Length: 337
Image (cartoon, rainbow, N blue to C red; front, side):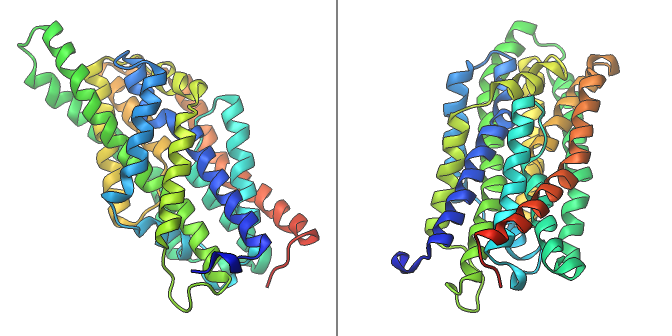
């Protein structure tokens, strides 16, 4: 691929996409480190280094099925142009920044999906939507936290029964070590599923500029750039959301933190294998609520959980509306097809 042939608008939009990926890492850093910080297994500054490393190497373990879905399975690739991509990214970035400032763990993934849909509808209407792809993504909004909840709850019951006759101090020290494993697995899942969304955006942008011929694919330089941008964002942390995810929803022991992370990681691995762009925020929140509910229903701070659910409901429409506005405003400085 001849980089010298890249138009200024293309370079600008790739930079915006990587900015979104960076903010995704910043915004969603809490998802993979909140429990390990809450249980005091790792200090926040060391936890973000740990998560960033596994975010970066995720491409070594997973295929690019999610990138294919985002690039050509939400809106029709044939209608994508610079204005559509600008609108989609602006909607997602603005919503991410607003929720990050407010400390609300909304979904970067669904902000991007909402942005794509909003920009696509603004350009050509309902014919822009790939209904099967949007349908399975919408279904994942409900399924990913439910699966995370169920797996975490099941793991708590299995672990509690297995270690029933073991001294509490021994259980605590064992799961402090195991949390390094579970946090690593969740960070791999986070890096694999979330970074691929930006890969799909850049790939369809290159496709719309005729740089791939007739075949949609993801160049290796796009893979590396997106993994690096996300890892860098994770390094910059996001302590406000870490606090919400790790302690405001429910207090966690190392044993419970391990169950939440492992249940969440399994959910992300399945979704990535199936090519479904799920929300890491939804997944880990469901898992944390699952371990809290296993202790007792009142252990979950349902008021905080309800606020998070409200943010989930408004994320896609809000990002879509911002995206539609950005699409129309982009007509003053970008050209479309």
